[in-house]
Image (tube, rainbow, N blue to C red):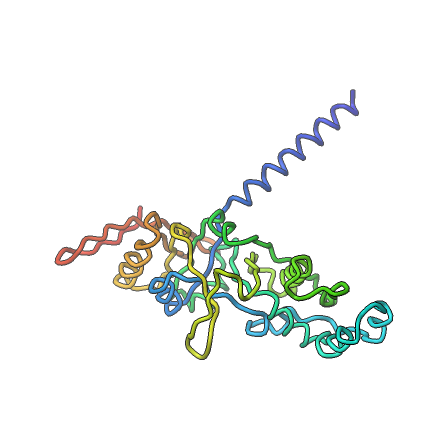
Length: 288
């Protein structure tokens, strides 16, 4: 009887865990933008894709060094051409460059109330945090949750290709994506998720931006479900951004990140917007 009760309790906990996991996978994701970046999103309705060698983390996709002699002994079936590739690519920096040819990504977060990210990515609350519908993002490609190394953990080694495996091999790309979804412990506060795809996926366009060429793709209509303003964004700017974002995401709601009255944390305060065309007044009121 006791054994049966324990089994039922275990099944109950297991079902709750699966239910919680399913619910979490339906929750929205967020992305912080500076004022200049959100104006670019409003003008072009695009996501900017990054590659590892361009990121602000020097350890992005940076592999632990390989003992090339041991590698060659472990893979005697490698052709002379593959062995030459090993010599050129499988040092720490070479791995980073190679991943940049295999995968590009867009970063999101679970946390819309992170003080550090508001200060950094939204430039001291002068920008916004956009809420994205996860289902729309999953239509673009598979989302990966970033895992973070333990404080004393060594960097991982870049996954070696199997015999005759090329960069565009689906299995090899899958392994490279997993490698790209790992970061150092110091970044754990970002609670990051990534869309990771080949840089030249058919929906990604290479276009000229400030300082060089960039990779972009269209944001699916309706994917942006809420715009959260930093507290330093002027009312007139809020109105302009709200009207702009509603052109492609007409169900987008609005809110503001404000300091909690008692704790050292942010609260998201919903805003109710009436945008009345000139010559009438623009009104932007909170729900309180």
